[in-house]
Length: 273
Image 1 (cartoon, rainbow, N blue to C red):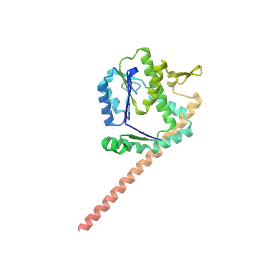
Image 2: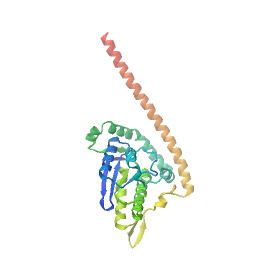
Image 3: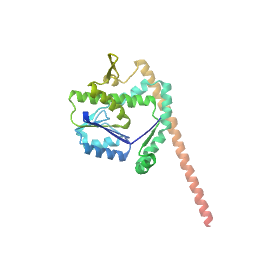
Image 4: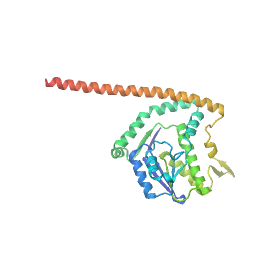
């Protein structure tokens, strides 16, 4: 439900000539720090959490890196449409409803956490011991948006290395939650020379497949279609209720502040007469 971690994670994988750089995409100061780390590391390739080099993104560090290293960009992520489709179609509606409630309940807390960090990163760091707070992650969120994409991005990197399409030093720019999973998969690739499988009990076991991870549906077409439609409706209704509630609450807070300020001002004026 809550993630407490440093806003920037940097891990080296020297045997593969890789540096994994994980961050919170919406933070300004860490984005500048990451650009400095790229200059120090001087990579031949910059693997990015994008499907296309010029894909629109809210990630501040990717925008900065794109301005300087676009000619070295290697896109390793799958299309966001695939990720969203797999989440909608592969999640039971009852589970999706619970997760949507959690996600929108914690929305203002995450917005305030980002705002507080960007306004005063020094004070935020002192109060939290240099860590950053993110709220509201759930199991199905993590499967579709984190774990599956760990597999896809790490698998793509491994295939590029194995095929000789990518060589030299490589910086990998991803969200901080992707770093542990990508590292584990690439460590297995380093020792086994393979991805998505492991050998145990006298036979090969397949953990994931890049082709399957590129498909928009995880279940049968009929079940996926039903889940997709129902979950889109749930998302729309939950968003409408919560966002409307937050707008009303915001106006109520502003009105209360104005009333208190007016009362204080009238009292001061009355006392001075």
